[in-house]
Image (cartoon, rainbow, N blue to C red; front, side, top):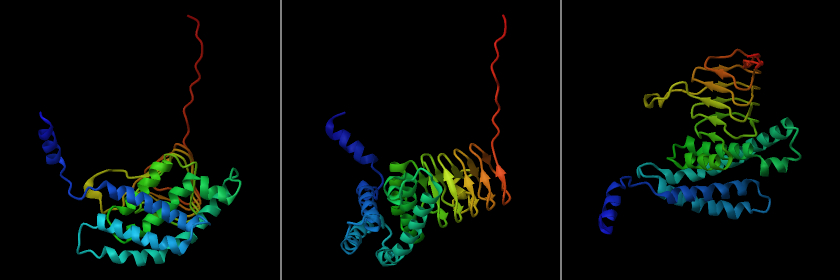
Amino acid sequence: MDHQSIIRKIQQHKKQPNLRFALKEKVELFTNRLFYTLFDIDTPVDENLLQLERDFEELINLACWETEKPCAKVWKRYLATLPKVLESLNLDAEAIVDCDPASMSIEEVYMAYPGFYAIAIYRLAHELYKEGLPLIPRLMTEYAHSKTGVDINPGAHIGKSFFIDHATGVVIGESAIIKNNVKIYQGVTLGALYVAKNLQQTKRHPTIEDNVTIYASATILGGDTIIGANSVIGGNAWITSSVPPNSTVFHTPEIKIKTETNG
């Protein structure tokens, strides 16, 4: 096959007219600038908000393929949510300091805790998700996923003072509901019991009520599954049905001790 034939074949199979990876790269830049605007003391808020508006306009031009949808009006509504989002994130940071004896300062939480970063980008993306904006919120949380190992779908609903410790391997699905003062550890999955495209509009992921602690590598599945308030879910537990409030659930390992035999 000659060079021109190869080019024609490649062009023939590039079938997605809206697949521009510049959108992914620009979302990452937008996400970084947004994070610095909210938290970095040396970043001028007024100047950065003007630049973020320009960045957002670029994202809209790349992401809004259905021209009848008024995507350009989203920015002003989104901007108005940022003080409330920042207030929520400060509560998340305070919860981490209060719960983790290893934290030396709140500055350490903002700069060094992957769980906090993942929550921050989730909360910022969730406000855009509620606007019905295509793709951008998911690219924001996937960027955080790539940096932290925490996969939070922007559609999840998460209450106040949320704490993810150690972070790596956490998965929180699109229709999960997490209420207030919840703590989860590395490797926790809040997932779907079944995976099928026709379930797209149904609640597929569990509800975690107030003051629940979920320890490492626990798996909780199903849209009808509710973990009652004040419960503790032990490490490696596998749960597919609801748990009453004030419960303790734990996985009991089977231990077999190898003994020597005379042959």
